[in-house]
Amino acid sequence: MTDPQIAIMMLVLFIGIVLLGFPIAFTLIAMGLGFGYYAYAKADWLSNIFDNRIFDLFVQNTFSVMSNDVLVAIPLFLFMGYIVERANIIDRLFLSIQMATRHVPGSMAIAALATCALFATATGIVGAVVTLMGLLALPAMLNAGYDKKLATGVICAGGTLGILIPPSIMLIVYAAIAQVSPVRLYAAALFPGIMLASMYMIYVIIRAVINPSLAPKPKKEDVPPLGKIVFQLVTSFVPLFVLIMGVLGSILAGIATPAEAAGVGSFGGLLLAAIYRSLSWARLKEAVYLTARTSAMVCWLFVGSWTFASVFSYLGGHSLIETWILGLGVGAVGFLIIAQLIIFFLGWPLEWSEIIIIFVPIFLPLLSVFGIDPLFFGVLVALNLQTSFLTPPMAMSAYYLKGVAKGRVELMEIFTGIMPYLAIVLFAMLLLYSFPGIALWLPVALFG
Image (cartoon, rainbow, N blue to C red; front, side):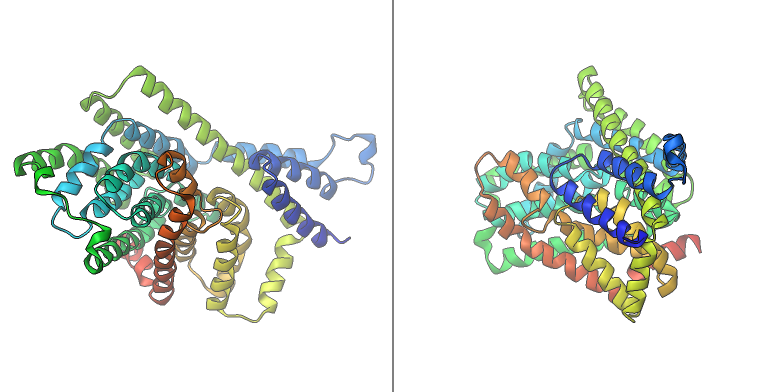
């Protein structure tokens, strides 16, 4: 076998092993070291089996990941999200937005989407948002007579917005891999994120207007006095909104780097938890533990994927794929469609972290060939990865929700409920293809 054929076999073997359930980070490391040992083997390797450059490469990659300034923001944003999640803000936020929008058709679903968007912005963790909103909003909507499919679709779709809306962890990871400014990437993703959340809300309102029985209006006796509604908004929505806008605003205004803003956000999360009297030693310890665990997972994924990708490229895998795509004779639009289709199908068996760290780097060298802005490509990928959580049969957001629904909804009902939102994501991608300025206008306006 030639080296490029071995590289393709390496890629196919990795996907097969992951589908069997093996840990992804350590599978990447093992395969990178194994195939790399073959790739970098010397003629007299039997005389000293440890004299192989793959070990030097692995150590260098580990040091590069641990000293990467961009990745410092990941544990800080994670910590901010876990603290906010445990500050008991979200239940008040959901209730206050629901009462404030009570005259809007489908007000409870609109409140759930708005809460998901704000919470996703604060955490960026899909599983946490879907799980918490499944415990909080789903019973409230079902008890109010909402259609099960509509209610579950709202929570699953809203929970995935954290992939796209800054300060998204996924965008930080992409920025580190693509070697682009995370600040510009945040600016590029802001309008598409708002656009997608708004399209979700418009769809809900249209459905509620056409068929009011899907989303009954709240009863008059359930609506508290106006003064109480205002008080709840001021004490729940305003503090979290100020925290998020402070973090995002300082980044987009160029006042602070993402890591610095994340540090301030973490302190702000602690302050909010203290103000709401939910900051305890047990909750703080749990937030620190979850932050360390998730950060370690991301870092080892980077180490493994960079080692894997280096060996894959050294064996000629990247060149083979590049030659194949260029041989198709497609233009920039054709390349984008091929790349997004591949990422779409990879989203069924794999999560966003594996796709971004392992497969997106295969396409990055071709961006300059086709004249595609890496910021635009990153936002397209972030939009596309929404589908990895919404596409049956491996729609992870559906499984997160089913796990906390306690038998009140069936999995097929959730799958049916999320299909319209999947169509909305695809339509949003089409809009972005047609009007790239949706993503590219703000970075140029802010930074030139």
